[in-house]
Structures are given as C-alpha cells and as structure tokens.
Image (cartoon, rainbow, N blue to C red; front, side):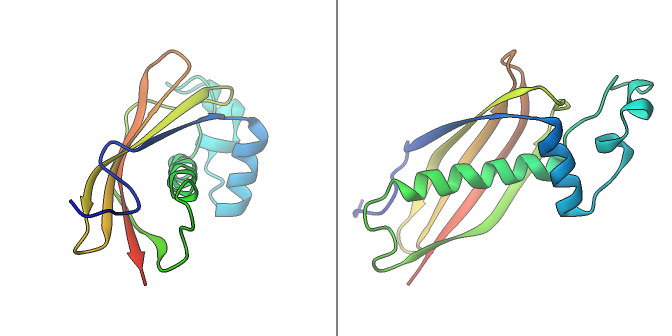
Length: 143
C-alpha cells in the first residue's frame, strides 16, 4: 500500500474524568438540560441512581482522540486538511456517571488511499473496565 498519513493499526488512547463541572458546562453549551444530566434529586430516585453524562459529550471526547492521532502526523496540513466525515454505529452500552474515569481507545482499522479516507474504531471503558460506548470514525483528507 502507498504511504498515507495513518496506517491500519495506528492508535491513540486518552483518559478523561467525567466531572460535575464538565457535565454542567456541556449542558449549557449544548442546551440539553434534561434532568438525566442536571437534576440529581430526580435521577437519584431513578433506575440510574444518579446523574448521567450526555452521550454527545462522549462523542466530543471521541473527537479529541481523532485530533490527537492526526496531530502526531508530521507536517499534517502541508498538502491536505484532515476533516471528520462523521461517526457511525455509536452505541451507549452503559451509563456514564459523574466521577467516572474513562479510557478512550481509537484504532485505525481501514485506510482508503484512493478516496483519501480512514475509518477507525473507538471504544470507551470506565474505571472498572466496563465497555460504556463504541463507535466508528471516518476521517477525510482534503487537498
């Protein structure tokens, strides 16, 4: 295969702590003030027994992974600009709570040199090693 910016098997891992401040800030940023995310009293009485993080916040953490792997490429923007084409197959498997410590793992699984794209898998696990979220990311390299 011809040289490309990323190769199958390239990977990056990031750690994130889900803080109350992060959830509240994301609620304000997104405008999503669902009780699921902002009302401890209501959520304490629910099946979840506490507030849970926004799913979209987890996708934002995924975006940080793609930025991290791209920024490792020397002179990455010399001839092409990497842009996200989106996330496929996002699944929220378990709730993510305030105080959880997350490990995100981003792995390039496919490189399409002709179409100037990479496809990567993303997994998120919590401090107990439980899988909480999965998805795929498509990255396009635009000249």
